[in-house]
Amino acid sequence: MEILRLPALQTNYMFLLHDPVSHQAVVVDPAEPGPVLESLAAQGAHLVAIFNTHHHRDHVGANEDLAAYYPGLAIYASQHDQGRIPGQTHVLQEGDSICFTGRPAVVLEVPGHTHGHIAYYFPPTAPGEPGELFCGDTLFAGGCGRLFEGTPAEMLHSLGRLRQLPDQTRVWCAHEYTETNLAFALTIEPANPDLQARYHQVMATRQRHLPTIPSWLGDEKRTNPFLRWDRPAVQAAVGASEPVAVFAQLRQRKDHF
Ligand code: ZN
Ligand code: FE
Image (cartoon, rainbow, N blue to C red):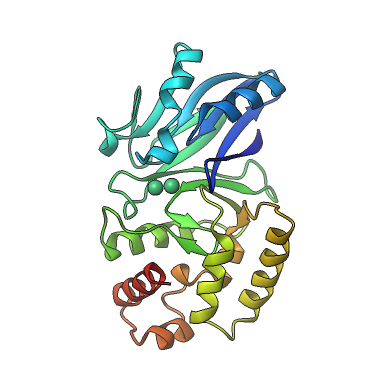
């Protein structure tokens, strides 16, 4: 399975999963149709499904256009998003498994950014190979999504579940927000050497107009404050120790950063 990252709108990434043997493809969170259709043509690939993480327009905006180009296209999204995903054909819930050309993805319900937000996790196929996590607007490189429909407790639980995945997981999140996220992270943990190093690396990457996605989940665990609510330095920075309170403080401060 090849994964192609397609920039869309201002800050979004769409992801094209492409099997070069069968020439089948899946797109995760298509925001706009043009780049998806161009990429499919360039690969000589046929779109068989859309995997949506949540109902926001910048993640489902091209569903109907793509369904018009590919009759019979399967459109997957959460059971909780029924009625607000354009063209939805399949309803997913926690623990469901969907196969793309023989490779299974597990569905994780990760509410918080929205009520019906799900993530798609492809476990590694062999020892030493990475897992692939498509987490929409739940976990970002260096940050997390805003709480539009969920509580801090829900989002904390969702991020806690993602944190349990292996370090060698590539995080394919849906927005290029990394530089600002890490600038905020440094206000929380200015003395974290992994964070300092990552920030400088990301700044250099962005100065060259290159993408910072995917990131490694191991790096997120070491540097993303929203996965570090149980670290003494993070707790001290926000003046709280109870996990939900720490998370709520972090989220609130980031909202005003
Ligand atoms: Zn969103
Ligand atoms: Fe978004």
